[in-house]
Length: 265
Image (cartoon, rainbow, N blue to C red; front, side, top):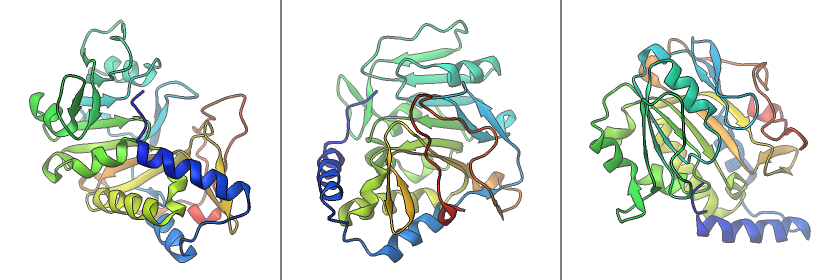
């Protein structure tokens, strides 16, 4: 896993302290609802399939893998079930993580660099832009990113040409409760707005490893997994009427699950 975004870590500590002492965030509630409305998932005309294990490291994505040739997977950690499933479907996988050694997978159609993803280049860090360009990424790419809070700055620094190359993106957004703070809302809204220009939301799933907040009956998870589908592949855009999906499972089996309220549907 990558080093946590220090700005969000500071905000997170403050928010926990305020919440514990009954001091609720100052963000306008209507702004929270507006952002949640933009993240409501749609039936985009493709069945959802589960890639990876049941539990942590598995994700629901639209069944468009026949259109995917390569996957970029920053934030490897010690769970590789998602990457293994893609390799079995003859999808080449590029992996990056500066905090672990090279994973050992049975299928050798993958490459690994021991670097973290960030906004600059040095001996231990690379950018998503340069990584994609070095690998000559085309318009047949999937992104699966779990980088412990650095996702905001990485998406913010990604140029639109490379952003549009992804057919599917699965991003785990950490510190999502920072949407309840003024600066956190500004950062998160900006990132989502950039993504939603080219992508529709196919699925959302709260990760139960980090807990959640409840503000005016609205559940706000601390970690939220979102699956995006490039709008070019959306066949329709119908609201769903139920969460969680039947293929969803808890990330951490022994922890209480987090259920999103009807505001999210």
